[in-house]
Image (cartoon, rainbow, N blue to C red):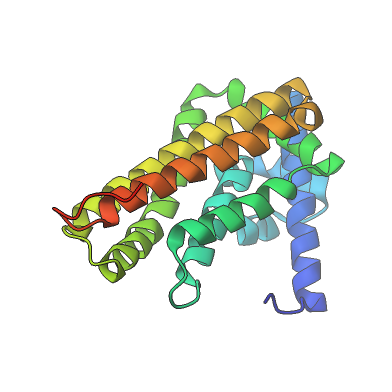
Length: 221
């Protein structure tokens, strides 16, 4: 259960949101390279020191949505209850994250971020690599524990493969969502996005069952 957020934390989050909004709007208007941190700070009515308290550099601001998704998934996996499977936590959290993406302001800012990323191919590659790097350690640890509990063989190798499959599938889901955001068809595509997410986790569960079956035991159908 989430703890109540205090006034100080709310103000901190509001400042971060103001910086993010100012940065994305300036990136879309002037271009990512042409926009300086001082420009973003001025537009958000904060000091450059305050900017750097929230973001290490401009790239972090632009990729904040992807960073936050990876970190939220990782945190939920690490905090899962005893006996709860990693795949169950991932699916539950992915649904929460998906449902939080439909507010008009969220979609507007995501659209700005994706438009800027489309003009910065270098950052597109960095975005996906960073997503995987942030999430992978928690997935490997979580899947390893699940596989050991199931009596599986070679959990180190299997957990790495499962982590890779999970990251690849989630990135593909993100890419489909991105197209919908850029086309402004998220509401129309909602059923398709829900179906895709359900299919992804059904296939990941099949993969987990395969790897969690001890050698020679066969896979139940």
